[in-house]
Amino acid sequence: MSWENALLSALLTILGGFIAGLTGLLVEWWRERRELRRRHLMDIKERCLKPLLEELHDLRRSFGVGERTRLSSLEVRRSLESDVGRWWELFSFRGRVDSLLYEDLRNHFPELYKELEGLESWVRAKYPEFLRATLRLLELIEGDSEFKAFEERFRKGFVNEVSSYPHDAIVFLALGLDKSYWPNVYSYIRPALGEVTRLGAKFYESAEARDARGLMGEAMAKVDECIRGVREATLKAKLKGRCRYLR
Image (cartoon, rainbow, N blue to C red; front, side, top):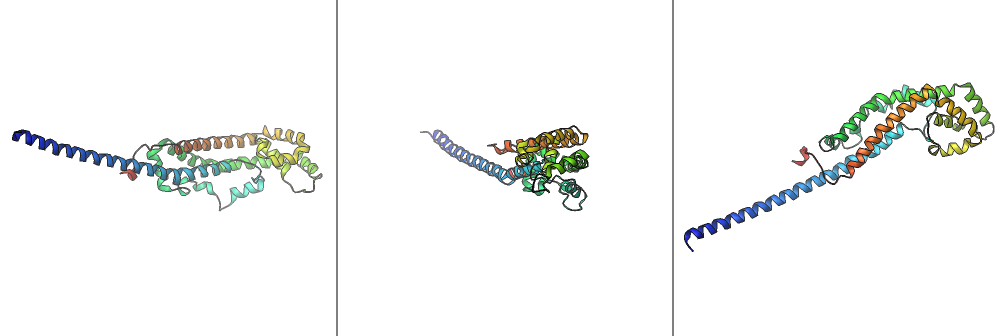
């Protein structure tokens, strides 16, 4: 073998080793990056998306009514007039989930982040309006002479004369709430179902009920859209986008 061939062979050997080493480094770097993205996605899911889903369901209940809801005008008025407990004024998901990972959603799930931000603003602006609309409906029902007469007649046949079930049933019907959401109340008022249904229909047609239903429906639609977005995000197997945690 001539010295030229020997030199070429040595150079090729060195080059082959260099390429093999560089390839190994690149493969290891790629594996580390993939593992980093996997761990970051899991952090987002566990510390942000999962608690976000719980918060959204809680928020949905805030705009809903049911057997556990205090439906009297007195309770709603207290919420509006109280100096404390006005949670909607500063409502934000940042204080309810990991704030850093919540902000990081804008890098990896920008559409979801935009929807959540829009929901926050809507709640701060519209929740008191929803309470006021509900209050107007309750005052309409509670001040109605026909309702008062019915309530008095109905209670006379029962031991528990302070039950709010007749009142609640009519409110539920005025808000268009299916009886599956208030089965205990439904069973209680069943002996007078015909009159309850008639009164519920009467108040259902009122402007007060339409306003309350409209805000409730709008809230449910916005919350449900965010719930859908969060659920879709939790199913993602790969993390898109870049952020400072992946450098």
